[in-house]
Length: 287
Image (cartoon, rainbow, N blue to C red):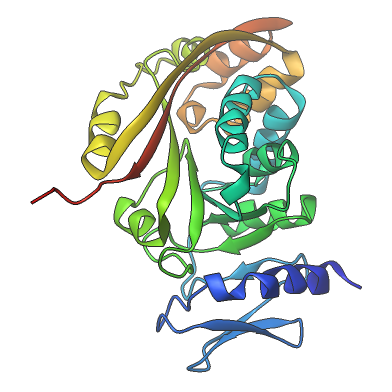
């Protein structure tokens, strides 16, 4: 059986949790090669096993080289190990009710895969991103999850279909997240704090960003049930420093001299400074 056919079987098991992004009708897998809705809108499975639900081309600076570098940083360094451990710890407390986890803005899929790998149970991971290059790499690398190219503003997911939504260092669409999240589900959003990647920011002349407004907006949409602050320094070697530069949009406009000074270091301690926000759908006011 091909990778495409195996992915089609996996999607078929969860097709009742999907909806057509064009007409919002129900979807089903046909002949292990395409996904079709009740109104005959059709979406082919790529040979790598992902489905492209976008009906328009998207141009992006997020290319294959960037996603390959990101994959190496996530899977071969310890930069995000503590973050993954915190997320897995929260999810393991909910294993009895976990069925599906949506990573909204999954990039090349490594965060989702690392997290699902640590969960001992039949949990389906669904990764969605607007970047075809990222999803293509995810589908080619990780065969146990479902991968979609799609728009956060028009998720191909049915109402109240997801137990957990992950939104890791990615834009969000809270109205859509609330639509597809189960009433007792949770959303976990990861936000960069003031000193995130401060050494790279200083090297390329970028000011630190504050997470205050993002946290405030999150709390407007969800009841905040946990707020975990992660702050540590992780040592990266020279190869990893090169990958960090390639994966980070904040270095796109850096001069060659700035990049060279940063990547010529044999090793460097890099600051991880993140907010992990855990929320639930707000309950309606009493009375």
